[in-house]
Image 1 (cartoon, helix red, strand yellow):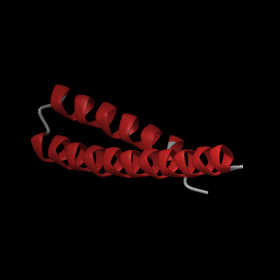
Image 2: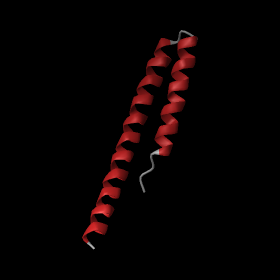
Image 3: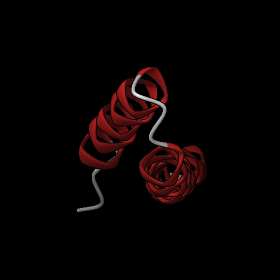
Image 4: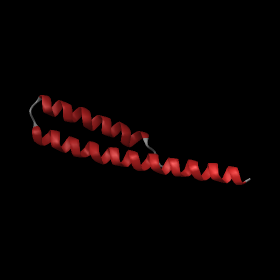
Length: 65
């Protein structure tokens, strides 16, 4: 099963790390956290798309019965 929640929470965590790094003017750490957040958001979006495709396929099967 593809899970959207874990990468979503990890993106949220990375954004908090980005914010904290910016408050400390640690720009390298902020950039890394930003990249981590983007990766996690991409994984979240892929999971959502997969879940939608499964839902649509099940709905289509139910309509043909």
